[in-house]
Image (cartoon, rainbow, N blue to C red; front, side, top):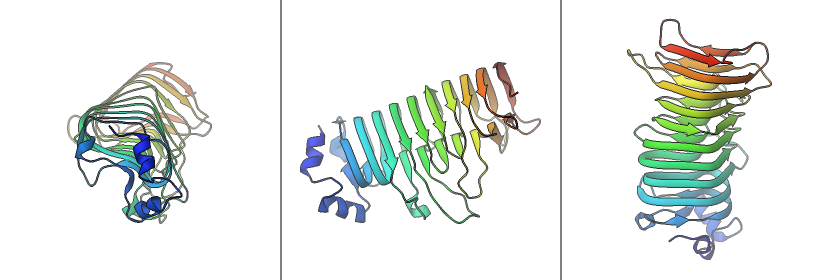
Length: 286
């Protein structure tokens, strides 16, 4: 078992010499190793670490639960790869200033590979970059790479990140998710099965990207990602593109909408003749 007491005994904390050494070495406050498999981690509070929890390199773990973490970090909160992972009651913020190099790309939660992964009752905020005006500004609350399977999010929010709240490149199941104050609140590159999703304002801080409430990366082939939303709730104070499909085909189905957005907003933008859209009750912008 890994416990908060073990981390405290090791001297992990914002004022310890160990914390300063870990930050200089780009090491996490709590290191996941092969011995971490089968562990339940209850980290408590971590302030000022470069990264709160993570493995050395791409080491996978299995049967790990992280339950109960509040962290203010310099770059990342959690990086994890593996199978049968539960992340619950985790709330993370990135400390200012924004990162200024892609070598220090900030992400609240980053999952490179794995399967059977559950994220619940958590939030990831303020993971930001500030780069040259002509380049793409990254910085995501949650990032899931291609090749991850059987992953779900329940009651998770991601706000005020410079790129995406959620950047999801693998098929995903979601319910009770929300994002606001990101350039692209949600980014989907693969199939998504979603219950209730809440969209707030989008915020462009700089860089070359265009913003949207939900951005979908279409496929240039005959079929693209299928996005099914049962309940879309939009509450925006500024005009926005609510759903934007780029780069090809996608299938969009939204069963029910509750939309509060000002004049000039656009519900769905996709290239004519590519993909399909089915919009249900309340799915219109006045």
